[in-house]
Length: 124
Image 1 (cartoon, rainbow, N blue to C red):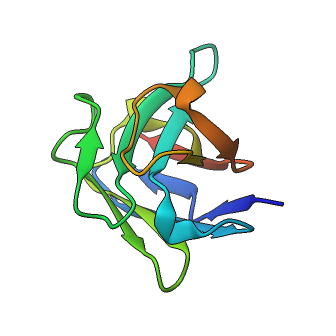
Image 2 (cartoon, rainbow, N blue to C red):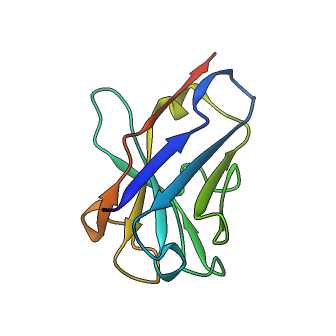
Image 3 (tube, helix red, strand yellow):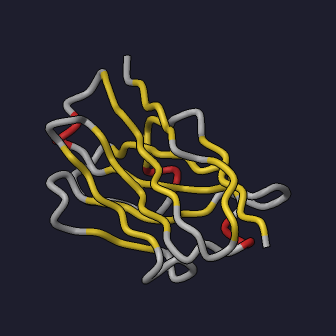
């Protein structure tokens, strides 16, 4: 059974930083792309960032481009999201997900397993 467990969320002031982690089990982690999504209250889930199976290719949403960095450590079955220069509009529940492909799609429907989410709250 595939499990994804996120951690690292919390309360931070605007302009601050957080690093989210997501540990995967139950699947050959290094064979699949990973992604981060977020959902704010009253809004639809949106794509944040994706990374290919070996970490050589990344893709980001325009809203976070240049502020967030996705990375992975296949030896630790872990994907990270480094978030800098946080804004109040970044407040959301952040989810990691694994795709049944090597290259990261941007649509949530192309991911087949999801974590439970971690809350990020940015105070202004």
